[in-house]
Length: 92
Image (cartoon, rainbow, N blue to C red):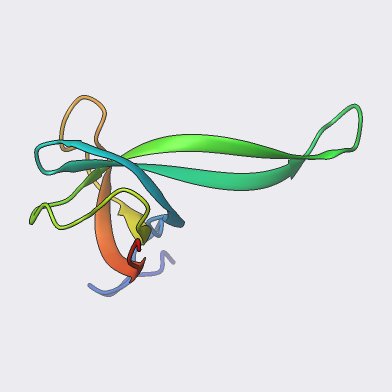
């Protein structure tokens, strides 16, 4: 028998990432740099990979340097697929 999921459960939970705001020049959009540490397949050295995520910021309250938590969402525009969950630390 197939299992039924409740309204609160998702078959594929949405990803949550933490990163630093690197740009806020667009209206209601911020660019967040997310850094991951991965092991190089051939040389076995740990390297940092940085991805830039376009995040929906409804209230335009983010500043460059803020540390934020973002969550994956449905496509909001051509490149914007993340939304702001909360600000972990404000820039000085």
